[in-house]
Length: 242
Ligand code: IYR
Image (cartoon, protein in one colour):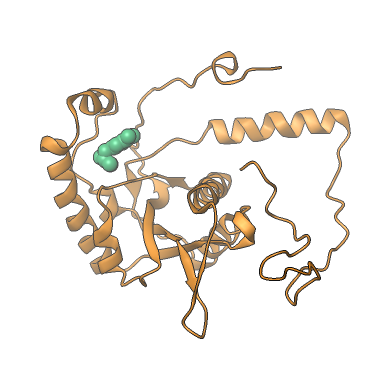
């Protein structure tokens, strides 16, 4: 985002006089931890190493995850910056086997169509090295599915709508935080995007203002879990210094 939307500041909406309206944040002193240059370098390197060990996993162990752990992962995700601090996301946590099965069946139905015609030959060629196909067994095996919904607007108690801002950016950031939090806890995830995802609105009975954004199976890896031996771009290919 090109603006820091996490802080309060002068409210200007709906008040031409520019006075502070009710709901304007008071400010509090902010002095986050500061480290020595050595500690800073070590922490930066350690965090990179932690995230570099994250892999998208398609082979899960069915071992359950404690509810309190999921709660903290979602709390961590929900700390992400968001447009006007609207936090335009809902994290639906699915552990019920019958619901996971229904989600798998609906996702596989869409994916069967995708792999047998809806995806372009170029797309299929790009996916071939990953070995993915329409089968989504992991949606039933993983102990927990977190379905991230984006909220286009909020409905006030009087029924009027108030729009959210930078919804894609905000929900993308929150989802990234969720993946990083899971990795930090020793859990593995998959960013799964069955397409179209409207069946999730129906199965999870979400309100009109929500649209599915990502489906994230989460758990421990299967004992025989394997991942493609992929290589990440070196720094020179992803960074330009000016
Ligand atoms: N959503 C499909 C296809 C797919 C697309 C991309 I881009 C990937 O990186 C992986 C899969 C599926 O989940 O199989």
